[in-house]
Amino acid sequence: MAAKRIGILTSGGDCAGLNAALRAVVHRAIRNYGWQVFGIRDGSLGLMDRPLNYVEFDLKSVGDEMLRLGGTILGTINKGDPFAYPMPDGSKKDRSQDFVDGYKELGIEALVVIGGDGSMRILNQLCRQGGIPMVGIPKTIDNDVAHTDYAIGFATALNVAGEAMDRLAPTAASHHRVMILEVMGRDVGHIAINAGIAGGADVVLIPEIPYTLDGIARKIAEVKAEGRNHALMVVAEGCKTETGLSVTQVQSGGQARYGGIGQYLAARLAETVEAETRVTVLGHVQRGGMPAMRDRIIASAFGVHAVDLIAQGKLGRMVAWQHGQVVDVPISDVAGITRPIDPYGTLAQTARGLGIYIGEM
Ligand code: F6P
Image (cartoon, rainbow, N blue to C red; front, side, top):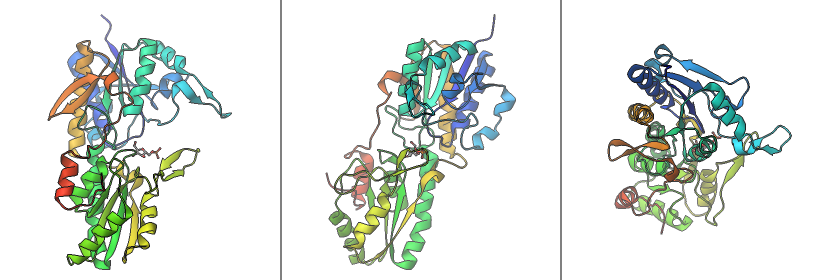
């Protein structure tokens, strides 16, 4: 009987822990089931390219070094939606059938997709169109995939943001400054609120909770009145200005990305707060580097469970982490949905309990 052939791809923004998930999938599939595993390069592009762009994995190609290696050895894209593929002349073309045809040409029987909510939505749609059995593995430093407490990459990003707070605290104290740390997270504040609590912030701003400049200024005055002449602020990149505008920058290639809210706040606070302010924008360092242990463990558990789901014929599912266990949920329940911070949940209440200003509901 011919060995079962499965494909795996990484899609959307990279993060630490992706290679650990690839390794787990390949090990489980080969060791336990004797299957062949094909790694598709550059997300959905690998199946749209002709010739197809893929690699066949063996156990040697995904050794323990994969646990320690950031990024994704397969490559990824966070643009190039096959349903509206950007063509060189600026037009958009539906290239979804190229993907489906590529899947058939490779002769695989199921696809493991490692991606965030956007990738889950697009790949789920592609797979439904082509009748392709799919299993999803959630990843994103933003940690906003629905129905999972953790997505791969979040733990590492949080460690980076927490370490930045540790480094900012002494220099803030030495110069009696207000330090603003702008972190990633797109439209949610998971990195910001966790790093703020862990790093001793006085102010944490997240997109889920509105703030006022007066509220921030009052908190800084309170810190001063308590006898401390420096303060730490964390702001999530997706926070809006007081008047509700997103702060974005157009990157090369014409894509708008969040960035600049820290600088905006520094400028506005200069009008009311008598303290020097400095801004640090962490940016992509949150996505790179050696994966945190927690990401390696979650990625490994996700990879093993994803392969087991295929073996059991449980398809159209996404693996998830709930209450310390790996479980699985229907992909249709998570595709395109984001998981925000609950303004009255444990993290927000903890922050309030510590006296951190997190805005006003
Ligand atoms: O979704 C992950 C993420 O890192 C966001 O936190 C950030 O806003 C965005 O991707 C950055 O995208 P790019 O890598 O295209 O600049």
